[in-house]
Amino acid sequence: MVQEKQFTKYPFGVYQTKVEDHLFWVAECPSLKGCVGQGSTPEEACAELEMNEAAWIELAEKYGIEIPGIPTEQLNS
Image (tube, rainbow, N blue to C red; front, side, top):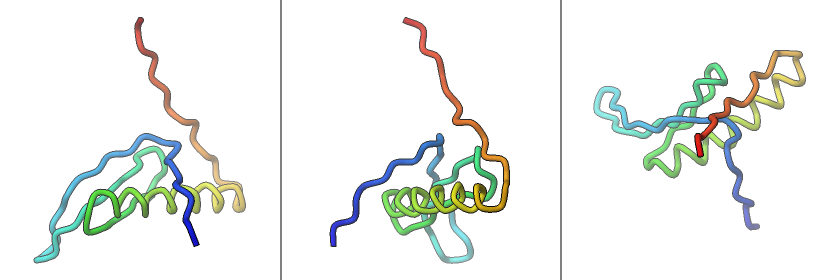
């Protein structure tokens, strides 16, 4: 079974952190409260964030929670 590549809709940051003796990567979406992904590599953290973002939006729709607009940036040309 081939898994289709997803992409996050919202901006996110990726950083490495250490808790006790465990070093891991975190991908975090500040627009969606509590929406994060973790993994042994930045790629694993981002892949988990992609799945969690979709689940966050699905549950927000189901329970009537306001879904924030997707932030945009305007580039000067």
